[in-house]
Image (tube, rainbow, N blue to C red; front, side):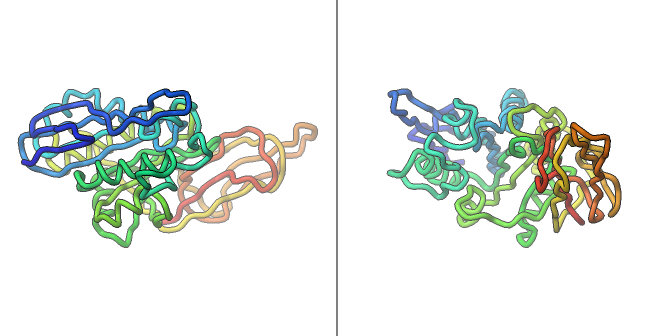
Length: 313
């Protein structure tokens, strides 16, 4: 088995190392580093990337990777290799923000440029140093502010290898999600490397159901690839091919009547909106049959705001 070389650091077969992808300097002369954890078996097999923290406020994914690398099982893989990056975007994590200091979204900076902006350089290093080493990967995200996503894998159904990997991860929901320009997974796909996107919970808030589901998905994937013997029950995954948003028809105090991940039928009561000054309640009804894949947790809403994200089989 060939040596791995990341930023001039060598990781040989059978070794487990923490290394630095690169170091970046802020205007205060502060050094920002991106730690990378590499676990290598003596036996050949697939190389899987598990990454999180593309956006600095998406803490659920960071916790999933933290729990993953803490497991002794990763130091004794049956075959293959794992590359784990708990926090890709260290500077945004430092600030607790989604965007980089220059206002850009790191996940729109790919494939990057060695001499470009801060985000462009991080993207370049990932594409240059990490992508050539892996066979595929899972990038962990959450919903945005106020929006909590039910645990789900997003991939492109028209590519069978993507769907097969998603089935091995076995999340409750598998959603057909097209590539977007400038994203990590689209640029990786151009290099022949499939990156699945896991979404669970919301930003800046731990969701232990989403965290446990994400961690178990990593174990299921590795078990299906023969990399580990960890036994985790599979979910019955629902494949979502179409989605829609249910929006608020009034402004006021929002009360949910369904839970994330639930199946609803057209006409079902999803929630009510109450004016803080009146007794009248305005009902929010489902317009389709489908699964709740995302929900707005904010108690105060304005007319037209997205409340429920519903996916259809």
